Amino acid sequence: MRHLVRSRSELQTQVTELIEQQAAISEVLRAIASSPHDLQPIFDAILDSATRLCRADIGSLRLSEESGLRRVAMRGDPLLVRQALSLSPALVERGNLLSQLATSRSPIHIPDLTALEGDHRDELWVTAAKAGFRTGLLVPLLKDNEIVGTITLGRKQVQPFTDKQISLFRDFAAQATIALDSTRRERQYREMQSELAHANRITTMGQLTASIVHEVKQPITATATNAEAALRWLDRQPPNLEEARQMLADIVKDSHRAGDVIDRMRDLLKKAPPRKDRVEINGAIREVIELTYSEAVKNGVSVQTQFAESLPLIQGDRVQLQQVMLNLIINAIQAMSGLAAGVRELRITTENTESEGVRVGVRDTGPGLSPESLSRLFEPFYTTKPEGMGMGMGLSICRSIIEAHGGRLWAIPCEPQGALFQFTIRAD
Image (cartoon, rainbow, N blue to C red; front, side, top):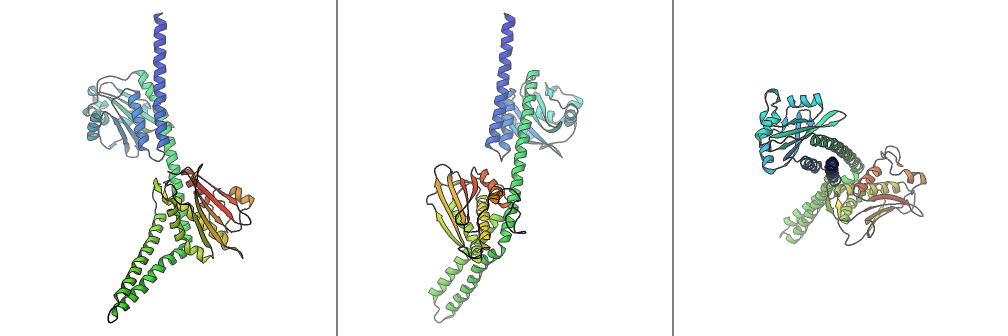
């Protein structure tokens, strides 16, 4: 009977430990889901889970770099954390500690840090002892049997970690490494997408160079003309101050107009990480329309708008959403520029839908979409433009941007001619 009771108790303990381990991993996965672009909350979640899982007072996470192990997070008892931060160097030099890990690829357990002697007195352990630790445990994070980082746990009392705790923590560290590597890969993928999006913006703006020069030159020319007129009004006897004042007001207006064009160019051309702002979509679209107005006029395209009033704000990156509009508008203008006859009209609409949030439409009266092009339209490197006019990445990038904002982008042919591109984004 005693044997059965003991077996049942051990089984309950094992089940409890397994549940705790799965709960710890679940917390890390939740952190990954809620912070796909920010690694710090994931680092913190890994340490919070690790310290709780092993009943530790403090935990430290370091990632391996060329110059050593860089600490990226520290969690636990606030007093211990402050003491450790004041003593611990930013980088732990490659030496005895990594030599031990490199040899064994196994956890390093120090039951009593104050009893360390000789070669075992590694810089990290000495620092930990000075900060108030008494028992330490260091577990390597391994990827393809290579050390990519370490998690260090500490206790304020001399209380060695049990074999079960070490084994449990080792399993947790392995799963945390997989989760961390997955997050870093996702981040690298998004950074690559951001690089492509930036390159696409520069290419598109390059195509608009002549139109943008015209947009900037117009207010500058008007400013010079108004300044000359103002001087003439002031030279009169008596000076006509009212006319001069009006000329000066026009100069201010034109200078603001030129500044606005330059600001929009700068925003679209600059390289910056994705942001999450509250975006008023109608205003963001109007700015793109103004930036592309001269290009539309040059190609004989009239631009019509129908914007829904009182649209809810959108949570997203304003520049990226404007990039989508820029691509769609330029594509539409280029599609209509080759028409020998007929109306060249670009119609841009916004509306609020109950099911999908805000919907934006860009419709042209160009040659339309063939069944083949419709099925491949959003594939990378596929283009229907003449050779030299595009790389076929614009629409693919646009779809990635919209999907990253939780929406969708699609196209449909129109009758009797033309195409309609639409995208939806959920409201804030």
